[in-house]
Amino acid sequence: MQTQSAPLDLMFQALADPARRGMVARLCRGPASVSELAQPLTMSLPAVMQHLQVLEASGLVTSKKVGRVRTCRLEPKALGTAEQWLAERRASWERRLDRLGDFLAQQPK
Amino acid sequence: MQTQSAPLDLMFQALADPARRGMVARLCRGPASVSELAQPLTMSLPAVMQHLQVLEASGLVTSKKVGRVRTCRLEPKALGTAEQWLAERRASWERRLDRLGDFLAQQPK
Image 1 (cartoon, each protein chain N blue to C red):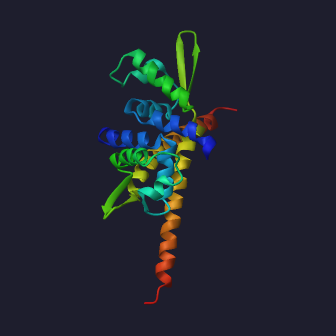
Image 2 (cartoon, rainbow over the protein chains, first blue to last red):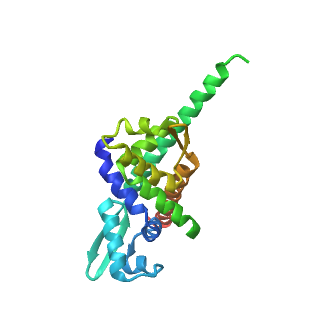
Image 3 (cartoon, one colour):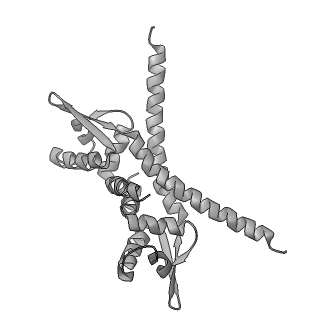
């Protein structure tokens, strides 16, 4: 798990901002240009580019410039890594509840 | 979704640190005292308390002091909120793939 720490740090950090979560939500519906990502956000294009850099550093998003248009894409595998960490925690929690249930069932009435 | 922003900000921020993720992972296996949480971490007790404050502010963990022992507990519902956000994004992504598949299937061969 140690080697997974840094990617998870960057990924959860990237998701800790409503503008960046909005950009991820948009990219889940398909690739988009930076202008398209900026449209629903009330912020300057340089500010959007900064958020994009954070998302790219986390591995959640990739972008490619062709001509004057930079197109951004979601990396669903990266999003899956964050979801998997949470799912493993939930599984661990549910195993605990199962053990508690077994323990209580074994007690004399 | 706007009203959910602040809790998600704090929650993903809380999870963006390996020590705090370690504390959450430990608490998924059951309640623990601050000393028990600190044990596997190579940091001072005040540093652990600071991480605990971040986790409590996010709603992921609650703690209660009885006598001299502060016992920490996971709030699984809060962890579920973060997991749900990611699951909704994945669902949105998968719907997109389905639509792409349908589109391709309708094309003349």
